[in-house]
Every structure is written in structure tokens, then in C-alpha cells.
Amino acid sequence: MIHFLIRWAISSLSIFIVAHIVKGIEVSSTATVLVIALVLGIINAFLRPLIILITLPINIVTLGVFTLFINGALFLLVSKIVKGFVITGFWPAFWGYILFSIISFMLSSLAIPDL
Image (tube, rainbow, N blue to C red):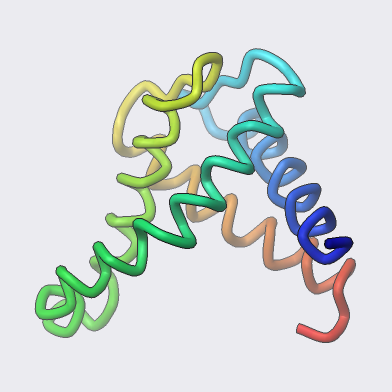
């Protein structure tokens, strides 16, 4: 349970940082950031593997680069689900998710050394 809470906090902090860095991504409140992190985690756990499996031929041809577009699209999907989370277009979502991944990885490396 503590591992889940640490990951949730890391994701929330990463989203908060991304919203302040990437133009076109806005978050209305801290509570919204917590909801975004939870919804994004659920989508990444259940929907993302299914989409990657369906698009496997495209991923093979593009050597996995298409996965970046899938991630951006899912980030945009979260903005459509969660009120108070606004992404103005695909490209802010694309770059925002890349930055989110980098920040989450770095914070996870610091907080959870067994990665």
C-alpha cells in the first residue's frame, strides 16, 4: 500500500511540474492533480497495454516510436475525462507526457532506489 502511495505522490508531483512547464497544459487545483494521477495510472494499467497490443505491427515498423504518440493520446484522453485538467491540443499532450515520464523516472529513482 505504501508503494502505491509513493507512486501516486510521484505521479502527482510530476503532473504538477509538467503543468507549470508545458504551455497548453493547465491544472485547476491540487485535488485535480491527485485525480489526474489516479486516472492516468488506471488508464496506463488497463487501456494502454491493450492499445499497444492492437497497434503492435505499427510499433514494430516504427521501432517503438509510435508508442510516444499513444502515450500523448492517452494523456489527452485523461484531460477529456478529468474536469479542471485542460490540454489545448495533441502536441502539448505529446511533449507533456514525455516530460512527465522523464520527471517520474527521475523522482522514482530517488524515492524508490530498488528500480
